[in-house]
Amino acid sequence: MERMTPLSVDPDDFCFADTETRGLPGLEDPRWGDVTQCGAVRYGTSCRVVIFRYAIGNGPIQRWDLEDFNGFLDWDTAPDDLREFRLRALKGDAWFVFYNSFFDRNVVNGGMNQPSDTLLALPVRSTLDAMAQAVASNLPTKLDGAAKAVGHKGKLDQGKALIQLFAPAGGGTPETHPDEWEMYKIYADDDVDALRAVYFATRPLWRWEWEEFWTSETINDRGLPIDRHFITRAAALADTYASQVNDLIVKHTHDACWSVNQHVALAHWVADGVEHLPEASDILVKKYVEDEAGDGLIAASLSLSRDRVEKLIVFLERLDAERGLTDEEFDVLQLLEVRLYGASATPKKFAKAIPMLDERGRIGGQYTFNGAQQTGRYSSRGLQVHNLTRAFVGMEDRAPEREAAAIEFICELEILT
Image 1 (cartoon, rainbow, N blue to C red):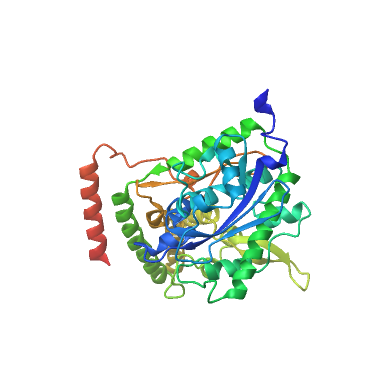
Image 2: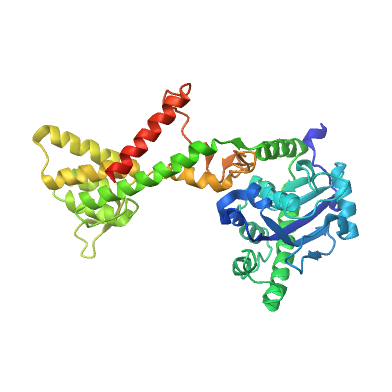
């Protein structure tokens, strides 16, 4: 029955912590210094931790900060209580609690000087995630929302602006912006206070749930193997394809629109082209409202969602078979076909994956434990791998032929453009 109990009921067995970081200068790829572009694994080796904020149990919030942005926080010279707590965590007797722990664990292990007694300061099993516990209690995923939901004041409003100031490699420093730096410290204090409030206000996950969490994080650390050569060439092909798609948008709309992502403009252009076809017009309408005179309903908003585009294509193809299409109607049909296949965001995943690759040729951190409220279902972040197609082109055992065909296709596209 030990698996059906909380890890501990003693508050002093938990150290609530938060980090703030800054990208390193001179990176081979500047995107590695932006966690939103490269993910936590790659960013962890491309940044330095400038603020480490912590509180053990219900104790006071303690500050450990890097005043000189040219160095690194060093675990061997960390505050005594923090080093002692880490040793307890390594033995499995205590745990560090972060909010979105995958990020903090990676930057602690990559953006600080590691302790001389172990390879990593914080192994997977030494950390917990207050966000996973909050979501299990049906609270918002964002710390600010979760904190306010349990009666806490939430995060400091200036936090986002302070991160934008100090996080970039060439951003502000304590010397150039001393007042903002002091405010940044207060912001970090508030984050720890907020996550501690959320953790103690929600149902403690049982040991078996944290066991699953640690297994999930181990999988995230291992990462997904990616063919760097393939995705680099695929990204180039996707970029060429996107350019061609937009050229077709210009052609079929006769210069009225220029991008497949002009959702509103395209919807109105299609509506004008089929306004004489009531059935087609109805498919486009997302919402009707009563007109001011009270004489009937009028369209309040239009949509070119995938299901509506598919229905319109079927309708126009049927109309074409029955009596043929006018030139204007045929332009609408061609535009809809371009929109159906050209508006997909999936090809953009190739380019998005490139800066996320680590030295092993893998992408980590793609799964979120307790990603969905109450159900505990996993979700995906970064590349959203749950949405990737599982089909293949039937040439998986013929790599040379596949590469040759891809090269030929790219050359043909270059000639066309």
